[in-house]
Image (cartoon, rainbow, N blue to C red; front, side, top):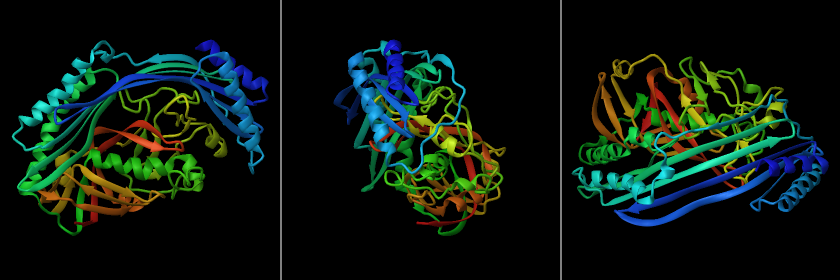
Length: 472
C-alpha cells in the first residue's frame, strides 16, 4: 500500500493542501456468541481502505475509499480538498497544527499463542469452558450469554511532514453476561469482558471461566445474604473496577481537548474543564491519574497515534493538580504546546479525533488491609452495575453490584446496591489513601459523529474516600 499512500499525500499537496495525510487501515477477524449453550451467529470482520485528511485554506477535509486504485484515491483526494476549501469560508479562525517530530518506524505485537492459526471450533472451546464451569458451579444461572471476538489491525500512516508508521496489532476479547435466579430473586452480572492486544496466552492467564464462576457465586450470595447499605456519611473503599469507570468518565472525557473547546458539545457533551484550569487543584495529594497507550498487551495499546505522533504516558492529574489535557495537533497548537498523541480513528472511514486509551488511578503505598483497618463504618464497592454522569462530566452516580459492609476494620456481609452520588471535585478531593496494586478492565469508548467505538482499558488501584454520603 505504500505507493498508494504516497500518491494520496503528494496529490493532495498538488491540489492546494497545505498539509496532507493518508492512512491505510485493515481489520480482519471473527465474532460469535453462545446463548445458553447454543450458537447465536457468526460475524466475519473484514474492512480495508484508505482515509485521507488535508488542511487547506485553514480548514480540514476528510474523505475515504475502500477501492484501492489510484483512480478512486484521486477522487477521494479531490473530495477532501474540496470539503476543506468550502468549509474554510465558514470558519472564524483558521485551523493550525502543532509542530511535531516525526519518524519512519514499524512495530508489531507478536502473539505467543496466535489465534489466527486456530479454527472456529478451537476458539469455541473457550466459550464452552465458561458455559460448562458456570453450569457446574452449583448456582442457578438460567441465562448465559458468552461471546468471542478477535481481529488483527494493520495500519500504514504517512503525511507530508515525513511520518511513515507501519503497525500490526492483534486483539482478542471474551465477554459474558450472566443472570442468577435464587429464592425468586434475580441478579445480573452485566457484560464482563476479558480483553487484550496480543494472543490467546493472555486469555489463558486471565482465566475468564474462573471469574465467571466467581461472579455467579457472588450474585447468589448477594441474593441470599445481602442487606441494605448504610445510609448517611460513611467511609467508602472503591475497587480498581469502580476507580476505573470513575477516572474514565470524570477525568478522561472532560480532559479531551476537543470537548474543552466545544467541538463535542452537540455530539457527546461538554466539559466542566476550561483551558485556564491547567495547574488548578481538583483532588487530594493522593490522586494521580495516568493515561497511557503504551502499556504492553493493553486493550488500548498503540505506540504512535493516527496523526503519526509518538505516544507516551499522559499525567492528566498529578498529585491532585490538573497537569495536562488529551491533545491532538489542532488543540496542541491552540495551547501553544505539542501533541501528546491522543488522536485515534476506529477505521479507515473515520477521521482521527481526541480519544483515551488506558486510563487509570495511579497506585499509592497502602495495602488493602491498611485502607480498611481504621474504618468504623463504611462500604467497600467492589464492582458496579450502573453509572451515570452529566454531559459536563461533573455530577455523577455509581450503583454497586458486589459490595460489602465494613465494620471496625473488617469486611462483613454483602450489601445491596449502595449508591454513590458525588461531584467530580468532591470525589477526588475525598481520597485520602490509595492502594499499592492495580488492575485493569476493558471497555469500548464511544464518541464522535459518526460514532467511533475504540478499545480502552480502565482501572487503577483501590482508593479510600472519607466522609462520603451514601444512598440506597
